[in-house]
Image 1 (cartoon, rainbow, N blue to C red):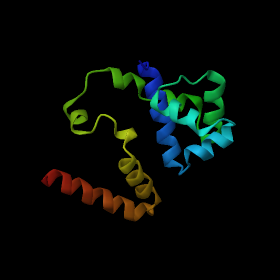
Image 2 (tube, rainbow, N blue to C red; image 1 turned 180 degrees about the vertical axis):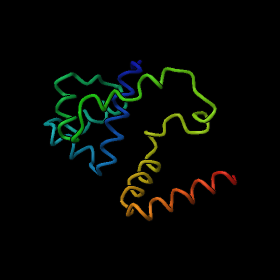
Image 3 (cartoon, helix red, strand yellow; image 1 turned 135 degrees about the horizontal axis):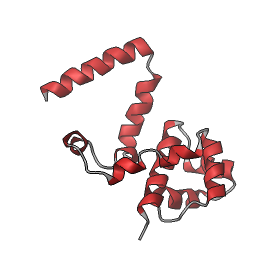
Image 4 (tube, rainbow, N blue to C red; image 1 turned 90 degrees about the vertical axis):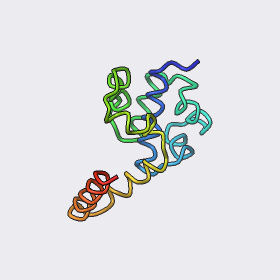
Amino acid sequence: MAHPVDVHVGKRVRHRRWLVGMTQQQLAEKVGIKFQQIQKYETGANRVSASRLWDIADALDVPVAFFFEGIEESHENQTPMAEAVPADLLGDKEALDLIRSYYSIPENQRRRLFELARVLSDVA
């Protein structure tokens, strides 16, 4: 059974990889391993060694600490707002594609889109 920390780190690897638009194959090539190993890391099936995590962080252009962000919150009690959001939001490809698209919009239009989304969510 996968350790919750390994699962969290794997989700963060997948999250960052999707945000930068990189495939598992591309990440694997940058790190010097096979893409199947990236798959195993992302699901938490295999633990990522410290040196490998360092290489992955370098390839994804983030500090190693990025992979541990939010781990405390995942173990705390969920608030009613958190319950309204899917538990595995970072694992949802559609949500990550939406985030990537959102940040590719110019800032002034992005602000307007955000306000529209806020209004629509209040109505629902």
